[in-house]
Image: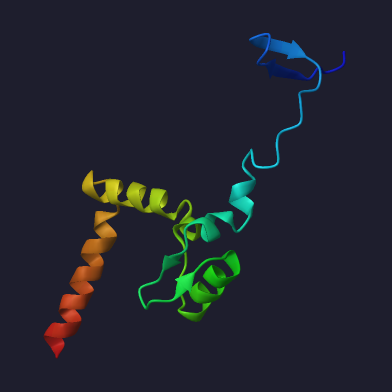
Length: 110
């Protein structure tokens, strides 16, 4: 069994089998991978630096030791689960009590 390719034919108003018409040069999601996002609407950083390309954005972030939120993918979900465990009492209370008792004893000795 071979696979078929389908596309929406605007003239017929339905899906038809076969290759579709090629997209025009300005369509699709190519904007994600080009500098059009920056050059169409450049922005200023907090210090006034104009950022109008991906290269400038990367250099600015590197120079100021900054990162974007996609570098933390998954870590926010893990932190939310940990907070939920603390709030619902599912964390290890015995170990925490022992740690607090050791710290109080250490400071009480002076």
